[in-house]
Length: 99
Image 1 (cartoon, rainbow, N blue to C red):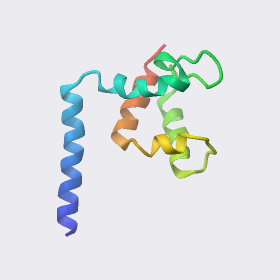
Image 2: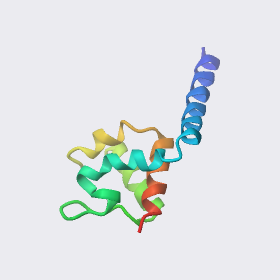
Image 3: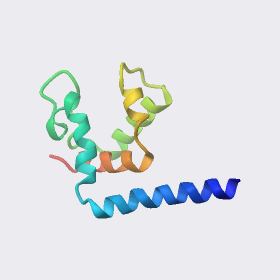
């Protein structure tokens, strides 16, 4: 049973990699879901903090804190639960590269 689970997990991880290879805009498209609160391309116009240009490690740390429940949130803990680690990596890399 464990072998089947490992094979399934490996297959899913492969699909994420294959999807990214097929869609060069996947990171941007995933990051676009953050625009409602954090502004277009992560540049906030007020209220929420900007994500554009923030160091990837800082963004990863904050998202991990939301996921674990260590950082209080109204909705981020629910949003972050919907992303895989690979997707979070793509999103944070994309935001860190923005000006």
